[in-house]
Image (cartoon, rainbow, N blue to C red; front, side):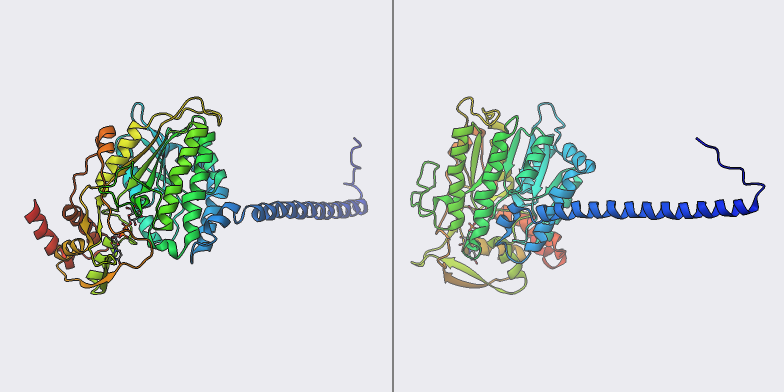
Length: 456
Ligand SMILES: O=C(O)[C@H]1O[C@H](OP(=O)(O)OP(=O)(O)OC[C@H]2O[C@@H](n3ccc(=O)[nH]c3=O)[C@H](O)[C@@H]2O)[C@H](O)[C@@H](O)[C@@H]1O
């Protein structure tokens, strides 16, 4: 390389050279900012392409299409969960930490609907005995999402992480199974509620059918395949008149679309068990109630309305008979879920192929003691110390069945399921939670305390 001319003794040449240097550096600056501009443009283009392909995910368009008012919120959350949270190292660490068992031969359970009523209670129970639990929930706004957020906080205290995402996001599900070798899936995510199915039928199809299939597709392809325990419903008995309801009774006369989608789930379970060797257990829950419960259920909004002095409707059958439910306390149902998980056989397939016949089961989880709605209201009145403004009306024809009553001998035989909480005891625990959660203890405390003293 030629050495630069010595300019120290020539002021004119010195001036000229410094001019050239300035010109060159300006050129360099211009060139580099041009490069910067092009790179920025390229990055922006890639980002735009990425956003348009991913937002909203096609799966969301299906699930949330008819989900009422907060559609936008859902899609944003789902987008964030799969495209953003779902790719970070910190996120992955949380997923691993939460799902790792802390006992010898502990399970690693994916709990769908973990921010839901039954999901929260089951997640806690599993975690407490040393199983690894990873939650999945889309936090939809079918009922007050702030209650779901509060349950999420409760789980967080126990080091349970909930992935925010939708069942129909197959990519996200596959990613979770890539990261974690789940031994079990406790599938509780669903569109619940019997009467809401007339308002928003597609939501039931999207969650209870499409969402379930999406989950089973990923589960059958997973290595190892997990065992699956999932929430069916007492409503599948529909117009069945044999009493009490046994698993062998007819379930081909559903009275609501909700019931029909749960029944469809049971048939879909049969198919995936048959073709792919997935071990699947369906649990028919009977009107589950208790602390942290669902605000769309009658015992919950009756409590709210009674306290606010608002009238409540008590349904009667068309021929004027009392409507009754086999109300089942949450702790009993949790024991049933854990018992079903503990006795679930391993799936037999691998690489999406069945190797041997696999376990397929269905159980009732009820209380075996139906109570008329009128009596439920009586118990609430006495716990709250407030008289209800009762309107007894004929049951609207929107899906309700006149009564439910579980025979649970099968669950007793196979995993010792035995409900131990009667409605008065369970409702007392619910009301205690309710007034403390909503910060209205002072208004109701006297009644609960005296009831507690009387009953114990
Ligand atoms: O066991 C089940 O499979 C189902 O239990 C409940 O469904 P349901 O029994 O209808 O529970 P609620 O909606 O809380 O109704 C309880 C009782 O109160 C009655 N009711 C409801 C609402 C009302 O305004 N008045 C009234 O008398 C209903 O007819 C029913 O007999 C859950 O909401 C479903 O998700 C679940 O699948």
